[in-house]
Image: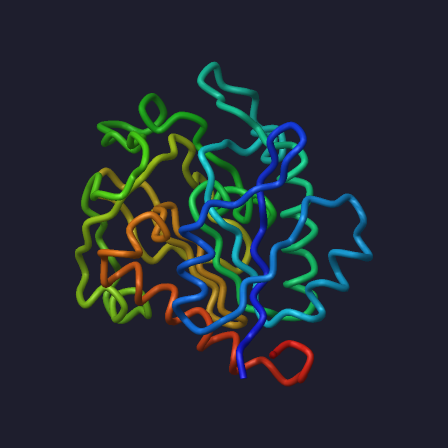
Length: 241
């Protein structure tokens, strides 16, 4: 049986869309991607998550509204997808209510982090001291910098050690860690790169493992781990096909 995994989408004028990389990565794990449209109807989104075994908030080159973490807007603030931020918030709420595993990628890690009542650095280049360049040009399928992983964590096992080369495209970053989360990896300038909640399993990755999935064993291991966690909590037949 194959697990149903909900994937959040993006919008542009009259279109909903999603990059192929996230869909391909989910399909490679023998799971079935279910596209979550950007809807304002909470009942529909909760009904969708009732039928899925996990949630993947796919990455995008966008920012999170700093007012959600009670911080003023920064002059370098990029596009803020209001519709998507609202939808992702409801999807996270529904996943949390059902204790479903979730994987939040790129700017969606920041969105998830704010969902847990945390704050963000609005511009890595100006707020922390001696920051590395975290804004990588498209398509972002090559390493941008090193990431140091805390030993004896699930991420160290997936990375095959405590150092990994990762891509990165976002200038926003975690400032104060949110509820029930712990940082398990950081870049060499101290920026939090990965957040973890162990039960239920929730992984927030500042990097974009979907962009490097085709050639990077670490990215492949992250996506392979996700459905394994989803399968453990999948006790309903309608979450499988």
